[in-house]
Amino acid sequence: MRITNHQRQEVRKALTKPGLALKQFILAESDDKLSYQFRLFDFHFTISKVADDIYEVTYNTVDHLSNYADRKRWSGVVELLESWAAKIALDQSAAPKDEVEPENLLAFQDTRHVSRRFKRIFHQAERAEKMGLDEICGMGYRKAVEVLIKDYLIKKRASERDRILEMKLGQCIEQYVTSDELKLLATRSAWLGNNFSHYLRIWKERSISDLKYFIHVTVRWIGFHEDLNKVQRLMPIGRRIITPKKPQLPSMVSSQPSPN
Image (tube, rainbow, N blue to C red; front, side, top):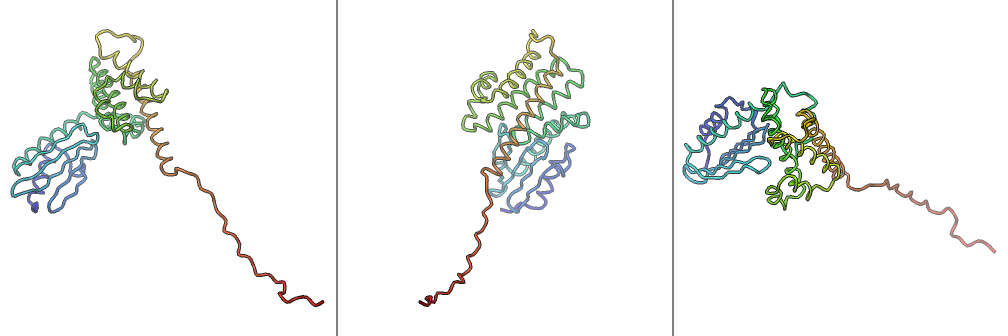
């Protein structure tokens, strides 16, 4: 059940066809399985040979909201990879690069273990804003808020994932967010996001910049508490130095009975 070198080259060609660079992928290739992970958005592909000209293809994202598995002949595998690579290239082109302020990039590192999908949506909304699409960018930021909060809660309560995904954001915050600080941030961000998503604006004195500020404070709160949890995992309990006892020297007192 070997995958040939020629097939490996075909896969690499399909992934780079829409303009992506091979160095953007983490490669893991063996005789019977090929695995490719896109570094920026965490798209992950695997190809396994299961029979003569029959291959199992899987695709998933880090947030597990997009999953795919099927068996195809080799020609179908190549076509599928080309379509996935084209989608990745489109998402990448929507994410701002040099236009993103360094402080924003620093803040978004705090979500690296929570929601990369949030980061992608926020960057797309930011690109829309920079293009002057002021009527739709607010809705993008509002969606980013929902994805950030729900993915954070799913990480904390994996067993209730389906219920969290089905609930409205406000209900989700009220029921599952236990921190008063995060509840305040998430609620205000959702309110202001709704302000730019509906026909009538209730908070007329608030701007898109205010919404982005709320989102960034929420991101920093999550990142700070994730780091606190990591510190506690690394050193869960205290320790004390135990000084070894000094060995006792034999007594110098003679054991002979004293003369009367």
